Length: 191
Image (cartoon, rainbow, N blue to C red; front, side, top):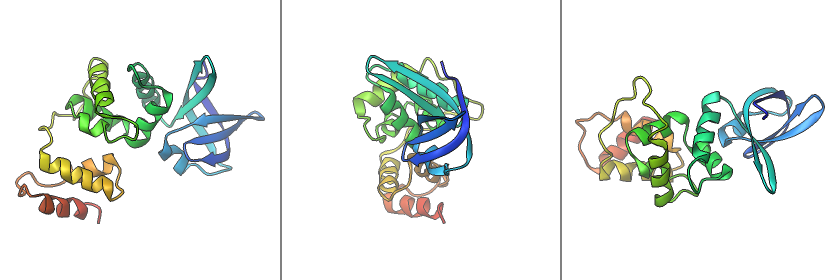
């Protein structure tokens, strides 16, 4: 297994990097955040997972060991392959996944491109036994229908699921429960 890759970025594409390691260019599939931050000519260090299938040899890379761990956990879910697992990690960071599993929020996972309601439920059920609550990760009240609409509106405006959840959590609990009011306050979080 190739556990890590360290080298110089030769080429950057959305969702992948070509990393020169001792004169060999390795194509490494990475979450979108990683490819967005990478620059050609820069040194890079990635925690990697080699996926071997009958018709495929693919290398997947992550900024952290935790990212690789969550990738491998997602691969254990029936119906989740490497591309979908990478899509989940491109949309949600490990803390957001942990929080969604801990609070049984399938709606957060179903906002990932390619993940429907059934797959989101499978992910929740499969990961519940494998993911433990991190320190400071207290259970949240289940998301109200109003907050669900606000979250959807923020995502439609181009914010990531993680950013939208952070904005929702910044709204004081005593705030009125109208969509417009909560959306306005959530948007103020970004200013």
